[in-house]
Length: 120
Image 1: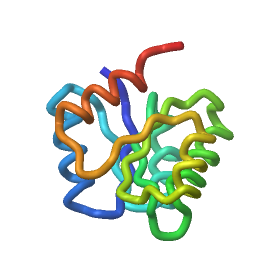
Image 2 (image 1 turned 60 degrees about the vertical axis):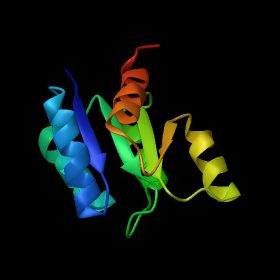
Image 3 (image 1 turned 180 degrees about the horizontal axis):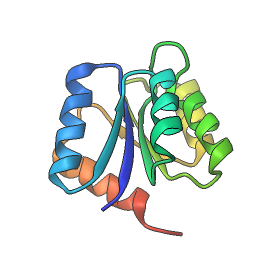
């Protein structure tokens, strides 16, 4: 299975995602902010994919993905968010990452992650 970076500032959502991913056999690096995520990557190395909330304190998830992609330009990623104004949608699409609306189901999370992890 894959090592996945999960970043969400809502602790209950973060714990739920981590639990689901670990149940599927993934190794998970979990963080509540972009800064924590960068520290985790510095300590543990780059993940094979990232699941990021858009609306984070400090830097948002889109900015975080740009920083991560300075280290690995083709880092697969998906965004989870309840924010869907035109600006956010355009910024997410510009990254080429998948996105999943909150709330989501375990199955929709699994399906989206499978799509992100497919090479190519």
